[in-house]
Image 1 (cartoon, rainbow, N blue to C red):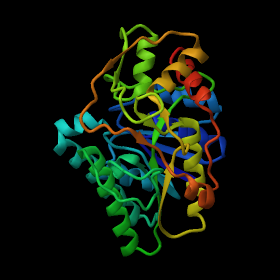
Image 2: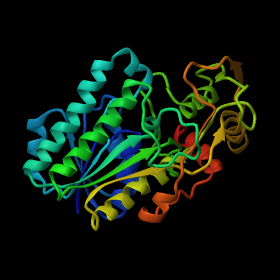
Image 3: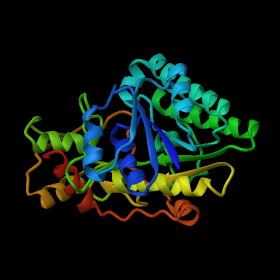
Length: 330
């Protein structure tokens, strides 16, 4: 089976390509390298001892997409490509709307032209906004708090409308919680090009003495230790979720939504202490005031993914912390 992976050299995309190759799928990848590096190709090949096709370019480029579909018989698409920094999206909303929405529309147009009806979409827990009731279920109210999250939600709506218009469509929406970790070989890693937006890459910068300390925003939340609690999932578990989604689409038409998380939350300080313990490194931190818009706790209900996809995360917090540091010191 031939799978087109858009944005396939990024953090989650690259780990998913590894899982695809290990499960004997043929992979065709397109990436514009705006938040990834071409050396990821060789890293994937080194881990899997398998090759895959790579096209350099943008999913918004309809001519290039048409060329890819002409040159390869695509069976299914996994759509990762998109800009993803929350803060940047607030600063440059038009950039995010133009890129993230147009790329999906262009991709769907070409898929329709070539009668390709299966797509897994990389969505996010940001579509849930702030929720009072935990754990968060797939039928929870949807509302967003930033342009990045809104592009994810609007893309979900576009895909839903497309399945109404085309009853042959099979769409799986995967709403990720907080992916961390890396491949256990230490070869493949999360490697943001700019200042890290997420907790684990920042911790690693502190561990490597690139930053003097970690900023911890708030220690007066109603949580186990006063710091914010989030649902963290190992990126390799997340990648497995995409394999399960492809398998699910073989027997199901229409659209379905799944949370991908562990189903419980870990606090910032739990992450820090576990990281220190498993990697034998000290992480200095400073408690600072809460950031506007931050919430105390956020974690997923994973029952639906377990029941319908047969997916359950298996990696522990210790695995996540160990693999995060190992992958950044290869």
